[in-house]
Image 1 (cartoon, rainbow, N blue to C red):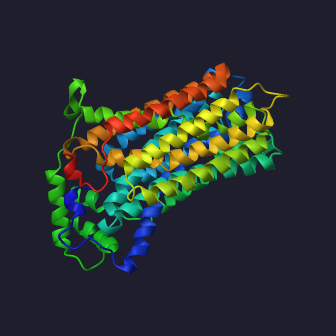
Image 2 (cartoon, rainbow, N blue to C red):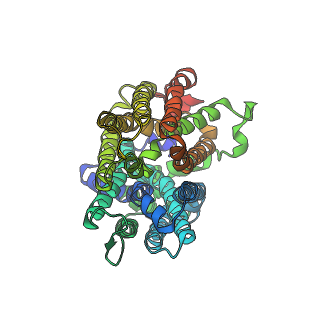
Image 3 (tube, one colour):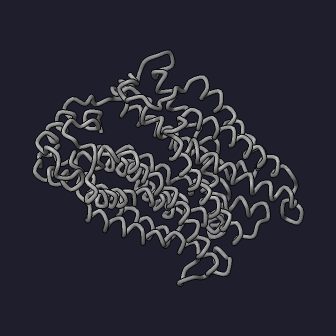
Length: 472
């Protein structure tokens, strides 16, 4: 959404109270893609050890099966924008819902390891699409006065999806007698965990039929009358519809379609601001946050925690993630992006360093000593809390604000690609690194968390309170 649309001269700043409930429903329905994003990303946590046992594979092969979904994520994110411009936002949501459903069924009923990996890629493609379409659609439909709050639905839905997936996994594990490979509904428990995603995927698809197409897309394909109807639905009757439509048309025509070539320049290939965006994305992943969501059950079991308890700890970590995200949403506009990032970095260093210390002790009867075990558990929650209240939200805010208008879209694409690649690197390397030395692995994550502090202080400028035009 451009600044011209955000600052509507036709009085589109507020929706009438009778329209607000409908707008909230529309945003929540679109954010179901975010819920599935979080759910599908984290549900694999409950199946890691079962997949290792079922197919008798080592850590390296296991890591590739877990991480391969990220390849689909990158492809889906890269293609979703152009697809949405050609066939519409709603149609993209429906395609994404179908892919989520296919992935859930295929992953629950794999013939072999290779087709499980294939279904994971399909699910990743759906995640990538949802990560782009949801925020874009909400921004285009939401009245300007409510855009920030409604836009936060996507991030909130992601962390709720992560938490619900862990709660469902824990419930299924208990129903299977604490055995990930225990029989349940005629298949193994881990297969049920992966298959349950059919329910939210179908719901997402059904909801997509209940919400309108984006006015911006409708205008782009010449359906101005339908665009007026949608604008009336979400912004109320008290606006000049002709002026509003003309405003959107003018904004679309005046937009600069940034390309990869626009990012080139400076000493090291890209412009400096692009490298800063890439740096933010890489640091966000290199602190090891997705280890907490993809491998936490495996991690706790590796230091002697009972499988049922390890699943419960994965759920409590997800609840902490939600709490931290809410804190970030409350304070990001109050104290600023940079202070929040620095607070988060310091907290992550403490949490990760304590985990590294705890994991450096030898296991006794297959378990960490009691003190180290409790320190590791508390520190893991501290790490996730400080990540969620800072880098989990702040990086996306920075990336949406820090780039000049003329390169914003292309720069965001490069930064997002860097994030998926960094995510893949951490996800694919963790099992082998943990087999090598779990404590040293956490020392590496601690190092990157510590390095993020001078990076923010030296290179990252505050964007709070500045218009997008002030970014150059």
